[in-house]
Image (tube, rainbow, N blue to C red; front, side, top):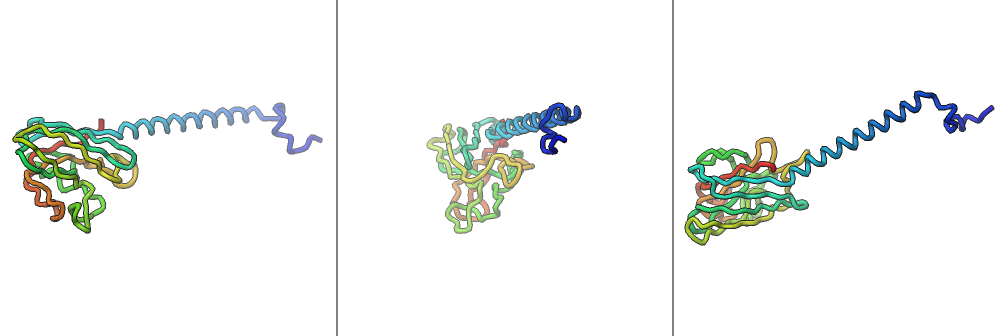
Length: 196
């Protein structure tokens, strides 16, 4: 009598359905790999986003690009048409820019902290550094890094959550400590952040 432990090693003794089962498992594995690749490509597309910046009159006055770099997001671009001086610059919690731009909501603040880089209970994730406009209306470049944040995420906080987000430039400087918005004044420029 043939030992039982040799039963499945003899091709002549493998039931014909066994080969079909192995084939089905192979097809299933390939399908999972394909789905994973597609999902990975979709996540990769979420690594960059842009914002078209508009003033209160609806005119395009600049653009911005947000790029995921490791655990951080880099925000860079140009804006023009602002008065000379120092202006607050923030990421706001809602992707809507209807003049006077209060539609963009408050600052992006997923961790429910107080406002301001100089506030011991701060800061909001959306609290960026002020920009300085050298001359009246002059085109001004900016580049800032937002630490420990995702543009998009399947779990946990992300800038582009269900209701989106926006970039906003204010009339005055952010004092980096006053709650809830640093005495930054009115909102002059707004741009909805959109995935490229």
